[in-house]
Image 1 (cartoon, one colour):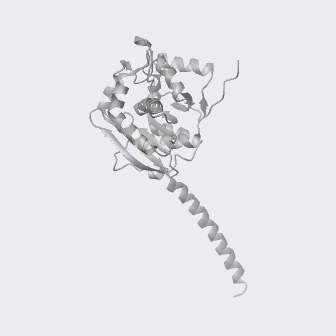
Image 2: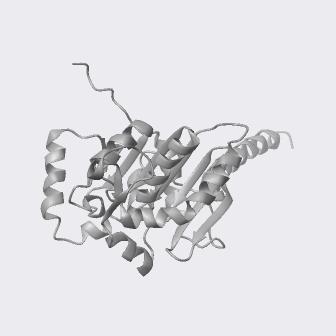
Image 3: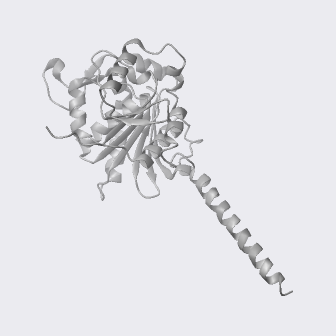
Length: 294
């Protein structure tokens, strides 16, 4: 039996996707994704189910879709509707068909047509890779969208999510893994949300586990899986299982691995300050040399 191929995320891309998953919580007026190298192409919102999503394009031309996580009571109701419903794609008989969380599907469908239409237009002349992200509920919607775009538009897709709950049954997981193998789901230490829903739901993608020591383990081995199972069963009786779910905590955990979580103007300011310091040294040197002759 061959050794399983080692995979790892693109850390800079992980940083960019994390910041887009945070910025999408803002209103359209207060959103500022330009500071992270993207401009807003389209803002999509459905008031009935409370879904909010943006389509953004990086300065280099990368297309990204970011879904907002839970932010109000309407979203919370969607989160608890854990009944499964048949997924849009895939074959099977009765309960052996790909099935997904009813609430997540209900939140995705109202914005689906507009997303697919926009992406189809953006990729009409250049069938570029689509990058999809989201935090919490947004991570679940990113999962659905990634599988949908790959199956419907036949475009290459990369998906990074943060603190996402489980989305579908084992049949959906199998279909998803085949469609979008380039998927990374980040779980921050004791975050309780990724342990839900518990019964007959399965995670997708490559696990990037952020431990409390600042390390990020990619698809950890048996011991870690036992720990994850224990966490899933009994949970954590402390505040960390809530605070570890905060999008800002995911950002902070990524900081040692990439500078892409920092605003571009922050990097520019550091460069300018270094240049100014260098110029001051040059000016001082010139003054000292000229002073000998005046």
